[in-house]
Length: 299
Image 1: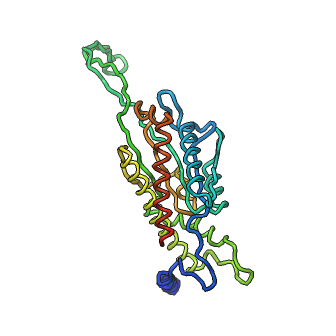
Image 2: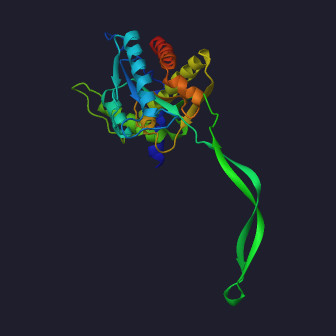
């Protein structure tokens, strides 16, 4: 056990001392981003959140298609791939597998938020209530006066944007998929496929996981900054680690999930369903990706 830990530690130190971006003689620098995956959330019978008159699946698709078109125009040399372009159901596992199979360098997932209605109670007076005491022959019927209420519901006022990334304290699940992708990359004919259980390879997977976390955080921060510049209220960058956020866990690349607003808030629902709102939201994400790409190209 001690020898394995010692070997793992040595591997980490060795990898940390080596730059991922070192260029070999005679080889030109590779493009930082060659493929971007655009993922409109939900679809088909997976309708997502319900607004007053609209469904999340439709809002996600409209914004994502606009975003994809803007990315294609801004980056003609970058391949833009969509997990869906119509109102069809796509399983989350397939979305992640699809992104990995297409060797995405960036994963952009578009969603909309929602909150349950708030339940209120109002005192309306008193009423008589029947209750019983005792058992058998000693059982007696009695009455008492109790308060009476009526109940009603109002919309939750929550609003704003937030962008999610996979949580930093859940590196092991993410590193498994990153390790699988690293091991599956095209090798030279003289190279042997790595052993995914080898301590040095596991260390490399963890380092790439940390690298992807940092890059996801950077892009998510840029997205929320752009929303703020556009006068939207930002709820900040959040980390998700609970079941159901498969697309953030299983994508072996920097990945973000953008919650573009709350459909439960009528004002935001109107905004997200308007052409103006969809253009502005997609523009914000585009500008964030442009900033991110410039930063990656610089590095």
